[in-house]
Length: 155
Image (tube, rainbow, N blue to C red; front, side, top):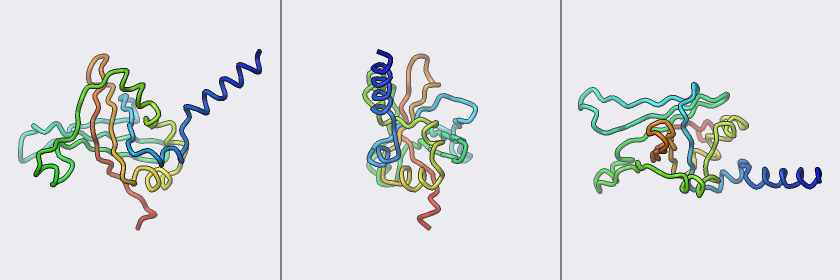
């Protein structure tokens, strides 16, 4: 019985664990933000125009890597011309369960070096979302963000 429970436990970890190959295949990546001491969120202040844009920066200082994401009102000039704003919405627990395989935990990112994360996963054409667990009580806010990273191998 003990061996049987160990086998079930092993298979459950292998089913839900993420490795670098599975992350490369994802087209959308969700990153949780809990407001820990190595995670910072800032409102972007503009000096010329009062801040009415609700632009934010999310920074993650991990062991080997510094990750920086920005939520801006428009992700590019094309989207500004067509008035397509970046997503910002409140999500429920059913949505979080549905996307749990696409959520990258910071503990997973710490397992790899800077070049593997920045060049092989984050620098690719992917859509990034921040799951902000700190804004509303018992609600999670989803922000569509832009990754501001640096891949030394591309140069």
